[in-house]
Structure formats: structure tokens, C-alpha cells
Length: 214
Ligand SMILES: [Zn+2]
Image (cartoon, rainbow, N blue to C red):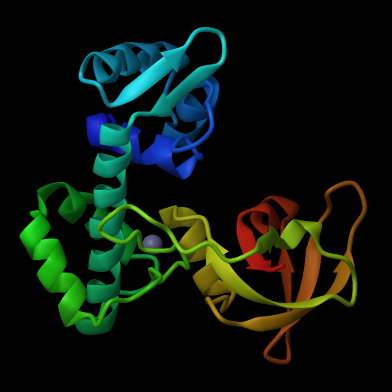
């Protein structure tokens, strides 16, 4: 499926484009598409006033783009909470469904959903839910891959991608799980952790997509 305009705005927001300039290449990587298609879409978004382009440095979101992308992230994450809590969806399934629902949710529906769920702060994958004015609660985190042997921490946030979430689910990894690092193989080799009395081996790449309390 080719990403639509709203998916671009969300991706730029997640990459830090509310404050920083983001390179086209990063957006292309995040959306798994060619840099050429990214340039084409960014030109359109610039014309619409959602992004501003700084030649040779990248793009960032305008206030309008910030607002639009924050609303999409908010819709997405509220639906995830709803699907998990009330419709029996699994951790890895909610993301896919929320990808569709986020685009068709009116501000009124989002507000009702938020109240119904009693104003959750985080999605089931640990991403903060922006408030209606686009503000996000930031908690200091670091990547599991940056930890040392014997360090103990708690899993707070994981990258939202279906295959990755399945990978974590198969290994019983959940938000809020506390664990200890048992061993780290050199040269970006696998990392073994102890979680709920079980030893779990994670690839280095996976450990880069898991964020823990700093
Ligand atoms: Zn999520």
C-alpha cells in the first residue's frame, strides 16, 4: 500500500519533525519507499502549507502540519487502547486496525473515545498520546541496545511494526516488564536478558527498537 499524505505527516512527526529538520532519506526509510516518491509528496505538502523545506537540510512541520499530525497520532493511539481493552485484539493486531481508523475519526469522535477510555496517557506500545493541543508527555528513555551487562530496567516503548510486535509477543515481551541484562555478544551480537525468570535472546537490531527507563 502506498502511504498517503497523512502517513507522511505522521512519519515526519515521529521522526522529530515538529522541532528538527528531517532529511528526505530518513522519511523514505521510515515509510519504506524511494526518496524520489518522498520528494514528490513533500512538494505537495509544502504547497498545502503542512511542511516547510530548508534547501539541503530537510523539512519540518509547520504549525498546521504539527496540529494535523498530532491529531492523527492521537486518533491512532486512542483506537489502539480501545481495541485492546474492549474488543479483544492482541498487542500486535491493534496497530494495523488503528492505521485505518485514524484517518476517518472526527475530532468529536476522538474526544468521546478519549473520555470513554478515561484519558489514557500511552498507547499499548508505550507511545505517548498527544493532548488535543498536540503536547506530548516525554519520559526519559534509552535503547535497550545501549545497556550494559547486569543493568536492570523496565520496558516502556517499542517500535510499532506488525512483524516486530509479533517477534516480541512470541518472546513474551510486554510494556512494563522489568528485566536484567545477562550478556551482550560483541560486535552488535545478540543480547540475552532475564525477564520473569526466563532467559530471552534478542537480536541487536531488536534491542535498538525497544526503549527502557533511562
Ligand atoms: Zn501503538
